[in-house]
Image (cartoon, rainbow over all chains, first blue to last red; front, side, top):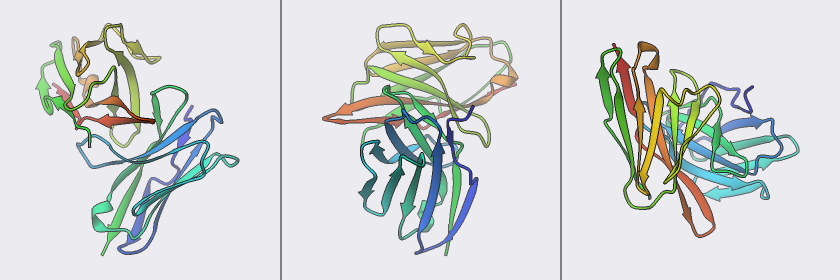
Length: 111
Length: 117
């Protein structure tokens, strides 16, 4: 049972444009959500997080939106840069430190 | 930012041998560390939660006798894959939980690629 889902396995965006990565979850009790970026053969790098009591969090080019009623969150990257090309994982936690990850979306930013 | 290291970064071993992977938080103390496994083109799967000074908590389906976890100090956790077999070949990643003020974040190690021949 996949509690956190990223239905788009890949996304291709032109440099300078906005990248939107989506994530859906099934457990309404999740209280914290995070986005990680991962390059091949490396560990994930934390990008941005959001508490379930908020609906938006912004950090530089990265903004995370949370829609609790839809059990949906998204990561916006604007403007997209070639260095943003990586696999992006969303993750959720429930009262504990344990993270449940989505399956990832491979983002490719082309010139 | 916080740094978590893993050693070795890659290892090749023969079937039946045991392999130990170390995870260290370099600039903060972590009472809780986590071990993940990633299969090709799949998500990160949590294997176990490592707590300093106590037994690890394993996720359902993970053999605790095969994947031995020891959290010997606030900066070191080890994962030992015992009697490794080719199906254990994978990318193993650890993370360390850090609390800073009101913020909780997990920092991940760079991962260890295990290949069992």
